[in-house]
Length: 212
Image (tube, rainbow, N blue to C red; front, side):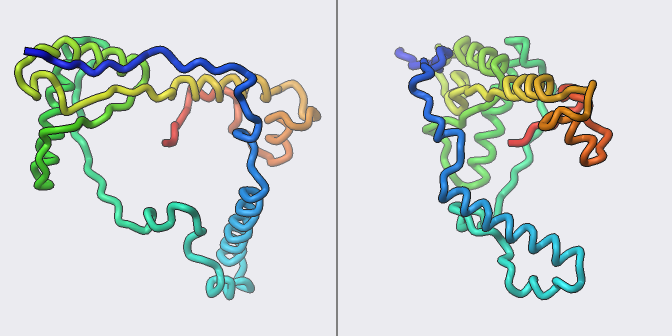
């Protein structure tokens, strides 16, 4: 009996500074024009909502700002809520249970949609701990004689750099936030004073909400 176990490389691709093009981080002329056109629509909506004299803008402003995914965005979304699995991903024993329940859930969803789930797999995304633990739990069951036992319906397990993004925001705050002066233009404390805000303290980890 031969069993193939899909492995996900944990080695990041090599990147040298000479390969980085500044154009990847700045907007092009076409993108700038598109951005300004979008600003016009958003400004028009604010004027229409806040001033009666500009109610006539409702007849000429587009309902949705055109973009490359307009056709896809117009389609109805189907949201399937998933159950909460009260297990600890730091334990391999619990990770095996998580994968077992996930496989059963996937099979039930495909069966309800009238689709056979005999080939392919559903990717899982998580932080580095989730990636390592779930991949290890799947490897433990690699010699099982059944698809369900081998967890063939789940994987690969991919990393999302959520913690890295959080650390980046934290470092950016530390670099830009200076509470000692309000005259250092460009810092968050300067902008806080200009905008008369009082809820910026630089501690992003105390109340952080990630957006997909």
